[in-house]
Picture 1: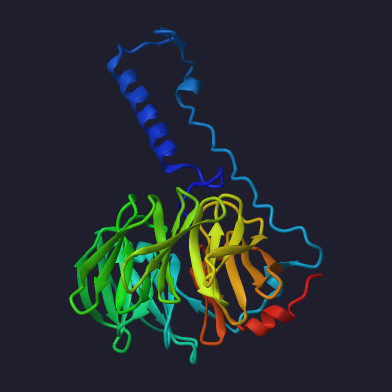
Picture 2 (picture 1 turned 90 degrees about the vertical axis):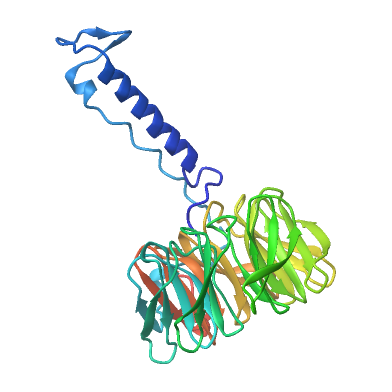
Length: 368
């Protein structure tokens, strides 16, 4: 959940490619010209030997996320002690929680199964190429979108073995999938096509056309909720009729979302805020300033709190009773977060680890 350029926090991939193409064209043009010596002028350039070997200047550093400034809230992540640390070499990222915890690993083309009781990695299973855009557990399976070969792999929740792999386009590597109302839900293109997949056949049985630039879905209150990063919207789709019931304006560039505490919560990458939408009224009832703008990140509700992760701030805990940031841990780590089985689960994509954290220990860890 790290590759989406927003507000300068991540260098746009298209610009990097253009720089490479410009450099390639320049080098090719030089190769086609007659050889010159003694600092001769080529066209309107005069190249010295040192200049000829120069490389492009390094890219400007990413701006720091500001975080929150509320006194007594910021805490170094080094003060928080996990109950267990699982080693998952590669880039552990998306997670799904069932009886165990499942975590995908894009560069390894695998999903690992973590045992919350023994603190062991039970198995690592090969899936499709470059698993991406979330994981979901339901209908006896873990559902794994694979961006590298445009497929979805189903793994048995019991045996941990592949049950099926079927073709499916995926809107974006930074997104999310959902399980609910007897179906698997996934965004399949940048135009806003939400596909409803029958788990009995692994084939789409309906398509719902939501706002363009929609990449992530979640399920709650008999509805599928979809964020549109492009249009700054949250869309509510009736899971029985496949009809759009409501479109709700939220914060800028919402992407990841979660359902809990009677609400839908969107992580808004444009300004680092979180929008809380009441599922009964379909209204934004709170906007929480968390100071974590930019690409990547994730959000999860459970264990009495709403949890946000981004680089620089691995854990931001929101108290839903006050709609405020109660704690914000800063430092190394983070990228994906889930609450479940009585624990908070946090990946450190750069270190190749997953933390199992006691939420009570989080609450008991105080600022200096």
